[in-house]
Length: 535
Image (cartoon, rainbow, N blue to C red; front, top):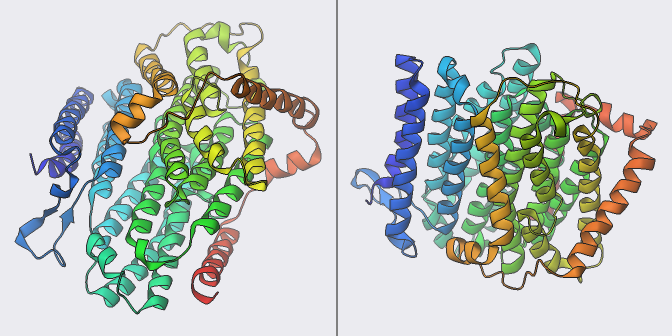
């Protein structure tokens, strides 16, 4: 039982190797079997160690803690592992038919799951670096999997940007090891209570955070994400948005726990980085006509909202809001990307202006998509409302901070009012091929969004250990706020966005070049150095 964390890593990796070697048309069943084994192991591990995570440390080879490779788990890593396994279930079911013939796709997909689970459990910085590097390579391959020119360029763009970020990560590891003589995260955290190397500690923190900002697609280091979503298959887009960028947020949590005693006072800085990311993301989303680009830029915006909560690591309520929004966003954004994939496949276009009558053509897919839209816009009784409300309550007396969140919510409502036009109009085509597995994946994600939106108290307290009884979804004030946002959003769409004025077209057509991305990368390093080292 104690070594289940190792099995969690190697079960999907070994399944991937079998798939690659044998290439049978039945290998998709092997992937599902491996996923079932993974689920059972994770449940058994959770039941054994829930509330006793101090006993989960594994040091391999009998080495001393300071130099040995080690794994460790706690409530945060366990939560992310359950999200990972559930998300992979949905994508494997959604791509089940594709897996019969496309064995390489299935190989990379399963291998990626094993690496991601390893990243969540590692307790030393160098292995964290190795797993992120493997993750970057696998994601780049999956982005470029269509083998078109645009796909290759987007995959290479992501890979090069990630390499630059991870170079900073590696330099930071060197600084930490030179200062503390270990890269064991728990031991470094303890050693920081009595260190005199404050400048080196701050410099290492800056280099870590630059890497985190790239992996999480924070403004201004976000340019790889919309490029990737524009060319990736819908299943990969769901994982990119639902989990891969969350890996960066997981690093943010873990690294800031390690630097807890360094007195860095990072909360306000990253709060405003989150607010800027949320505003810029929603601004670009409003200008788009491509369905996947709308969803991609909303991933950036929602990541900003998450950071507004996570930045307050020592404010339990705000942190809980940000943490829960990671999971809520993973569910409703995966639902939206997978649903969009079904619609795009049927209509052979991504433009929302060219798609009409989806409600008549695909009623079940339409219902599931609408649930995703209600969730992301924060409608009462859907999961997005819960986490957004927790963050809102934490800043309701903070003036401009509250109004920034309100404006972002209006922008989100406007975007999905714009996208909702695809459901209306005459039935322009007939769908003869039914896709029950894809519908099952969509239904499962939609069900999860509704469940978390209504049974949030027992789920949050029983699984996460968070008490959120003060969130009341049934008040008239909540309904009024939501319909006010929808009303303002409709007016804004009708009179500002729909006419497609020059500023909107300019934002939509703006594409950050690789050279500009590099300049902004350097600028961000200088800004972080100024805030955390020189100031």
